Image (tube, rainbow, N blue to C red; front, side):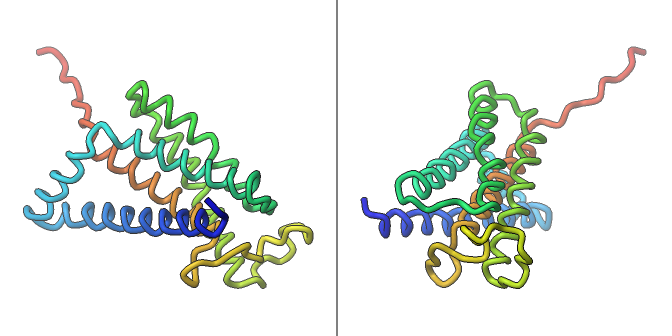
Length: 190
């Protein structure tokens, strides 16, 4: 596959991640507004029960492989903010993979912290590309953070793709939390 096809594929994945994230948020809101919305939310979230961590693992792995392709195969040198996003994404592969394998839902807080930090960095990086004056010398002159190696569909750049992945991971972790049984407080013996 040539570089143009790969970047187009990853741009489509980012848009699919956006659609999935928006769908999850809309279902979450609809589930709180009425019984029909709650039923639909329960059917969809219930269908994902037990798969949330695996799906988040797949998203993190895909994002990691995509970033490695861009730097190691396509020879695009990561800027400073790209490295910060990698620092947040790469550990998610290991953390979510182990958690999915062990069905360890306690990982949510750790994974959400990394994904949240990565999302903030990716959003700021994308803003710097849209408004270069925001950069203010935060990156090296060799690989400026304000420049986009490519832009597809008029707005999809590498930081946008990373942001899409981080947000979908956060949404999947939220579904995992929603699908987890609420621990019952133990009552004292009478």
